[in-house]
Amino acid sequence: MENRHKYLKIAHRGASGYEPNNTIRAFEKAINMGADMIELDVHLCQEKIPVVIHDSKVQGNLIEELTILELEQFDVGKGERIPTLQQAIDCVKGRCKLYIELKGNNTVQPTIDLINKNKMDDEIIIGSFDRRKVRHAKEIAPHILGSILTGEMDIDFVSLAKSAKADIIHFCWERHPFPHILLTNELMETCARSGLQVMIWHEERPEEIRKIIQHNIAGIASNFPDMLI
Image (tube, rainbow, N blue to C red; front, side, top):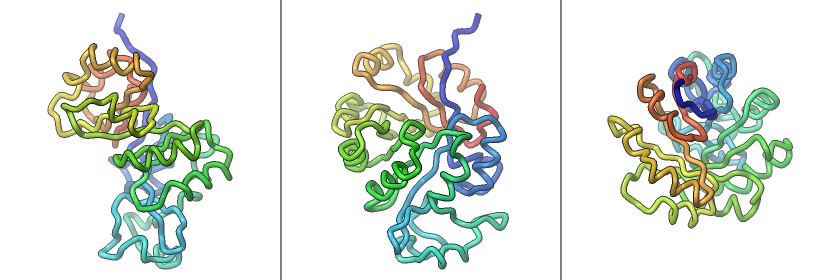
C-alpha cells in the first residue's frame, strides 16, 4: 500500500492556473475543486485597508497610494476586481481555510484585526518571507499559526523558524527540478523534533506530488488544486 499522509491542499492565489490570481473567481474555483485552504497575498491601500493582490503595483500604480474606490476601477482579468481581505474572508468563511501571505508594509496589525473581527483564528495561517512580519504577528496573536517562507536550500531552517517564532517552515523550492530530493528524512525529523510543520510551495507535477507526500507534509500549494491527490 502506498505510504501517504493527510495534508492540506492549498490553492496558490486561488485556482490561479485556471482563473485570474488572487480574485474571488479564483477562490470560488478552488473551493469547487475541493481545496482545503486558499492562499492569498495582502497589501494595504491608501486607507490602510488590507487588499488582496500579489504585486505592490497595479498597472504602474502603487497599491499603498490608491484608495479602495480607485482600486475598484482596475480589471485584473476576466472582469475581476481586486478584492479586499474582508471580501475574500466573506467568500471562504465556513467553506475553506485561509493562508494569508503578508506582502506589503504594515500589514500585520490590520490583518490580525480582521481575523479577530471575523472569529477565524483557528482557520488561518499567517505567513511571509519576512521573518519580522511573522514574528510580529506571533507576538500580537500567538494563537494564530505563523509560517516562515523561504526559497533557500542550504541554511539552518530551524534557526530561521525560531527567529520568526514560526510554527511552520514553508519551502518555496519551485525552481529546483526535483524538490522532493531536498525533503530528506533527516530534514523532516529535525523539523519534527523542533515542533515545526513542513509545507511545500508550489507544485504542479503529479509525479513530484506523489513523491513529496511520502513524507509527513502539512500542506502543498498548487496553482492547480485539482492536481493535489
